[in-house]
Image (tube, rainbow, N blue to C red; front, side):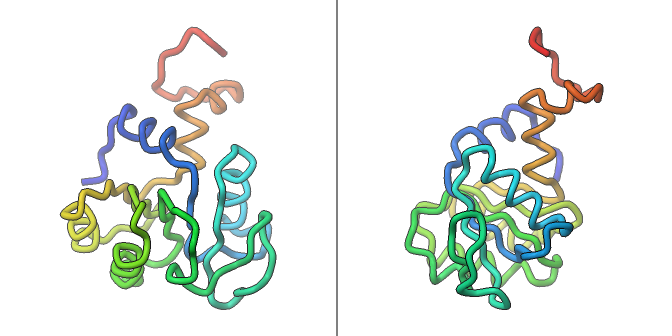
Length: 156
C-alpha cells in the first residue's frame, strides 16, 4: 500500500500548486518546518496549519488553526501528525477542501482506513513518504549530491 511508482509521485508533485501542511512547526530545525519551507522555495503555495500557532506569519501565509479556515483552493494536504491523528484530518479535508486531489502522509505516518476513505472519493493518497525527499529524488537534486536515486536521466 506504500509502494508508489515514480510516475505516480511525479504526477502528484507536478500537478500540485497549493499545499496545506498540517502540524507545521515554527521551529526551523523541525522537519515540518524545513519541508514546508523547501516546498515554498520550489514554488508551491504552502498554507501552514497548526492551532498552537494560528494567526502567526509563516512562509508568506498566516498559520491557520484548522483546514476549515482555508479559503484557497488546496490541491494537497501534507500531514505531519501521528498516525492515530490522521482520520479526523482526512475527514476535515474531505469536508472542507473541494479541490483536494492528494492526501500525503509523512514518513512514519500511515492510516489504511483514512486512506481508503479518501481513495473512495477519488483522492490520491501517499503514505510514509516525504514530498521534499521525493521531489529531490525525482527532479534530480539528489543526483547532484552524488546519491543514486534510481531515476535514469541524461541531465545532471
